[in-house]
Length: 222
Length: 345
Image 1 (cartoon, rainbow over the protein chains, first blue to last red):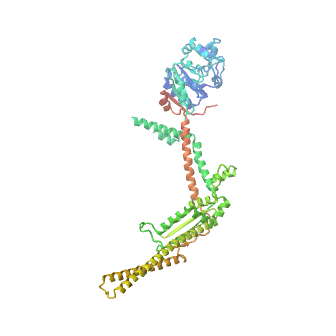
Image 2 (cartoon, each protein chain N blue to C red):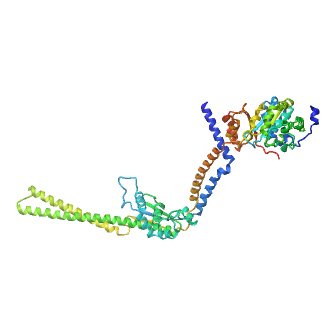
Image 3 (cartoon, rainbow over the protein chains, first blue to last red):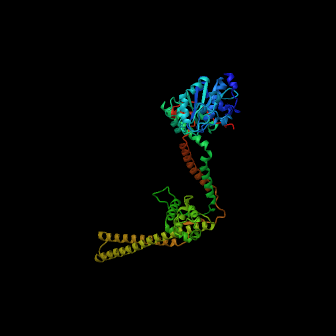
């Protein structure tokens, strides 16, 4: 395995942990612990709509698994409609998961290695066939292969209310983490997004802030 | 348990309102600031006002307090009369015409409200409706803006504010003069009625005296031997005496009534005296009380609008802010809160 990793091209001028700040990583580390810490096998990170910090949190959760537990981590991008991780992490966009599912390249060809050992597979070019690709992923056993090769797979899923295949994709993972942007996402949308999801997702509130003055915060906490 | 949950819900609601307030501080406070600034601006835009006042002494002996209301002083009673007169349109019009107020109102349209003036300025005077007549404005001004108060058991103070010192002074003078005329006219009428009454009484009683005297003379002529033991003679003498006595009393009353009537025409006969005549004010009134009043009113109105805004903003914001809200509304498990941090570029 080590030899194979060494053969992989080391990419990513920016490590996943670098696209977020230290407080962000710290909060993700605590959340990761609540989710099971080193016992998580696969985790899908989704949200109700776009712009809630889903991709950043997926990257951070992968970084936390590597940093805190020294686990062999795969960050898997499954947002075929609007992939963004390659741009944000300065990695190659292709070949990606779409190419692997179509059988055009092997898993090893799609893997990209970060200096700390974290690996990533980008979404690749889906050409509008995200739903078909997700169904194929489910039936192909490719995900099982990935979970066998990596200790933990953290997936950046599409948003539940903006993608036709998001629910199918969420169902492929042991745990689903729903990112909710505090002060932005209406409770009704969260309710609509989580309706019928089995098992029910756990929620990570992103961007929680308060404008209450410190004395008032102390008072309300008391 | 139920009470604790209710308290918790209430606390969450309060926190939500507080959160909204601190999140949109400027927006929520804007109506308050605007209303305060507007009220101050409107007050400052008003012309300066001048106040003139007069103090009138009512003679307690002439106008004794009503025995049925021993706690009411002469000044209180006369102040009430003054207020009653001010509520009369005819009295107000006479005062307006007598003083400079009517001419001033006609010249300046002083009775028009600020919105009407603004609408007229922008050519939308039709929306403000037709301007009230000078008489209507006079009645409105005098019935509402003249201050009458007793400042002692026998002294009544009258004051009036106007945009010009001469108008203020002239109007108070006209008020005093018109009041004097009204009171004098009333009292002359009353005194004349009393004189007429007693003249008639004297006339009737003179006839009664003559009749009683004739009856007595007739009886004495018919009964030359009648003496002090004659009962009829005694009765007739008594009747004649009583008639004379009543006649004399009525003559006295008539004399007093005529004296009273004559006194009405004399100086001071009106029962009051102006001890502080109205003077032309040299300085305008301080704006501070008006400003404070306007500011308080503006702030109160702004507070109301701000409260409505805060309620609307809170109601319109259905976003999730706290983990507890998700747990409470959806029953989902929340594994953490990531604080709002600026993402690195």
